[in-house]
Length: 413
Ligand code: HAM
Image 1 (cartoon, rainbow, N blue to C red):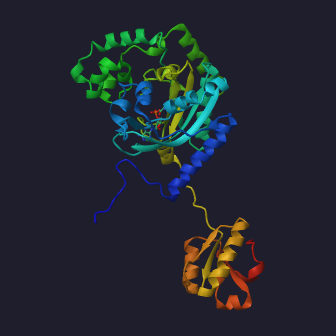
Image 2: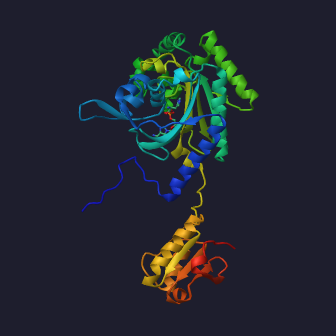
Image 3: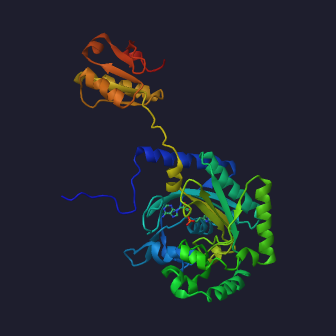
């Protein structure tokens, strides 16, 4: 029969990779809790409308990257392509915004986007996502960006570049959009990539960060949004940048950083690594002050970010697999019952290990113990049973000694 493999763009994480992911999650919990962020879990599946209304119907994500299908009653469901909309929905659904003036939340897990898979780009990928809801203060922008950078540094990553831009607000962006459209109308449509030809009408800002070199060259002289925003947005951005500088966090201004999701307002940012291709960001985020209203909620401003764990994993060294403390080589059928008891006593003391499920020879028992890189091989055969002992062999030093079986529950030395 033909073998069944993983779905394209979906990957298994074998133990070493799973360990790397566990490390990234553990560090995230450690760092984010220092900033009073609390963990929440939201479903993988949501009504499609949540993403269409928040991310925007004209974005690449909604247009062509979502895993969308009807349920048995023909309601359209989507595997979440990102977490921000779901976190905001949860905050509204459970009235968090009424209970606390600010909600600082983080979550982990798989996201799904139907993209062309390549290194660091998967159809099922994992994010750690942080959201600070309920405040418009630039202090929140600076703090969450600093927290992200501290997280990445705590993972041991170096050579990071933080790029920043402002996208203005719903009051000033329409005027900028018109200016940009006027500029773009002077370009020859045919020279643009297919995506940009479509974006020209529906989402002109997205032309600014098209990765196609021809489009980038054609739009090089486009007006910059940060120079066109209203005084409030300008002040907000200047304050955010000042605060970051005063906290010792350097950044570069990228006037073409518009991000791929329509809910962004004001501050947007991405983190790039010098050790990866220029086009792939490790993390991205921004402010989304109109998102709650777009999904039927009250005015809840917010700012957040997400890191792509597959991309971070590419930069992290492998983590050593934990080694077991013991392996019990059972040489006689009748040694199973005492071996099982012994294993449980040792585990109760906090030692990890396993035993052979069938009786083996001494030689192959020792081979199994060293293949598992156990610290100790414990040998139980008829000799040991008769004497009521277990033979304890330190596999590093090669030294061995007998211990009283009923009394033995500590491994040391
Ligand atoms: P995003 O820029 O779409 O933002 O994704 C954030 C990060 O997820 C990217 O920087 C990248 O590392 C990773 N990523 C995205 N797509 C893939 C993929 N196909 N394969 C592997 N990694 C990927 C968001 O998702 C926003 N929700 C971030 C945010 C939170 N904004 C405000 N709050």
